[in-house]
Amino acid sequence: MSWQLAAGRRGVVALIALSCAVCGLGTAGFAQNACRPEDEIFGGYSILVPNGWGDLDYKINTIPNAFDVSNTYYFRNAPNLGLLIDGSGHFLGGTTPPNLQNGSDNSTAAGYGLGGVQYKWHNDKLSPFLRGFVGAANLSPDCCHGTEWSFAAGGGGGVDLAVTPRFSIRLAQVDYIYSHYSHVFQETQVSVQSNQLVPVTHPTQWNSVRLAAGVVFNFGSYSSLPLSCAATATPAELFAGEPIRLSTAGTNFNPKHPLTYGWTSNGGKVSSPTTPATEIDTTGLAPGSYSVSSTITDPKIRNANSATCSAGFVVKRPPPPPLPPVVSCSISPSTIAVGESAVVTMTASSPDQRPLTYSWSANGGQVSGTGASATLSTYAADGGKTITVTATATDDRSLSMSSTCSVDVKAPVTPPCVHIEESREQCTFDKNPKRPWRVDNDCKDILDKIATRLQQNPNETLVIVGYTDQKETAKDPSLAARRSANVKYYLSKDGSTKIDPARIQPRQGGTKGEVTEFYFIPEGKLCAGELEKLGTAVDETQVQGQPRLPAGKKKPAKSTSPSSPSQ
Image (cartoon, rainbow, N blue to C red; front, side):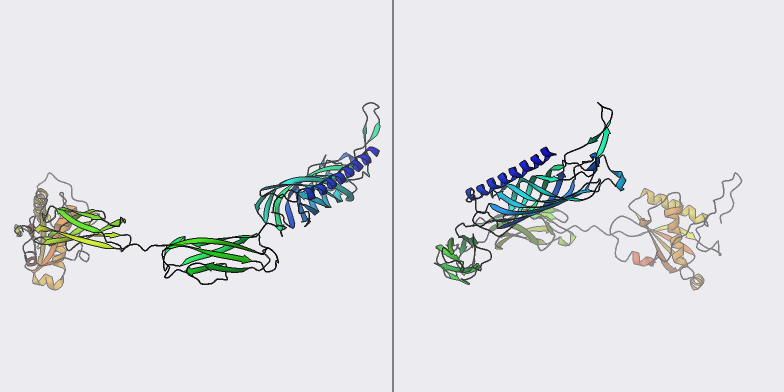
């Protein structure tokens, strides 16, 4: 055990020497840079490599579950050197072999409370540091005689990455920590040479390595840089009468001290000369260059307690009066027929070289297009008129100019109107008094002929007019409408030649007899009053056509015997 104690003493001596060396570096490195906090607090994740043994030949495994926190207060006269307080906790560790007698294999823990010195090279980005410390260790291996307090000492170092003057990231921290855990229980094993039980011993000191990374918060400052400020004037160029915004900010002033501000200008009126941000009224200023000065003062400092800075602005000469666009318009062809179109072209330019947008309007037809050309489309209502098209160009200052051009639309030639042609065919409904609306076989033959004609003349339409006698009207006022609707149903759905229902108009004509009559309308415009002579239209939402045969009843099969009389 004497060599173990000697090694421990050598480690303590080395740590004391390291601390002395760090103290010597504190004074030598005083003027490295200005980013020197008064105090810093570190917190982060840690891993402990114990490099030690417990009772009964149990080796302590690496403990990856841990935290490490520290606080360093730096000296005013040696701001790179500070007093260090450090504490870490390591838990849920195990041993090799695992000790399952305790009911778990992760009850090993260790804790350190340390104090010492830390020397840090404070730089703008990467700041390395060295540290030395002494203190106490609380060691609790998984086996066997429990927790034990021990003297601890060590040292290490690392590097921090500055994100802001108040916040850094500790990229790495590596510490060596010496501690001691006594072995109360001794284990024996069989010696290979003597084949006898001999005691097994391991060193009681722990030469541990602690790794950590986390975040660092900086407080206070020992900065002694000269005071300075910066002033801005926005915008830097403007016309007389436009306001200009001023702002100023100091550098290296103590953030805890209240500051005073003062503004002066060789042109214009400062609205609030004692605030860090203000405005200048430039009304009446002649074109030219002007300057404004800002002075920031720390009243709590006696000497070198202020900084002055300046900014400039320019009052521009007023621009000449703006000129609107120059626009002309042309249209081709100048005469068109109804339904034809003409192309309208606008020639536009800006004397002030401003960007232009184009728009169109007309007192007739329809103009489509948003660029320098558009298309004028004409309709029937434009026949015989002169359409005037207005072309307008507008610049980005909302100045606009218009030009007009016109086109003559020839009056359309009106084709002669067409007359309704009455068919000689008609269907009668007097054979079946029980169903006086049914399309019988005789009517079916007539309708098949009419369907053939409609098929051969696809531009014709058919008007079906249903009638009743006076007795039927008294019994069933809708009978005439039902007859014409059933006829349409046969022609469009039941018949062998099905006609588009849109080409068939069912109407009801009053009391003329138990018949339906048929009228053909040729292609073209119907002469006035022709359709009105054929009664009124049937409301097909109220009166709907029905098939000749009841639903589910099949047509009789053809027979070789003589055909029966018509129903």
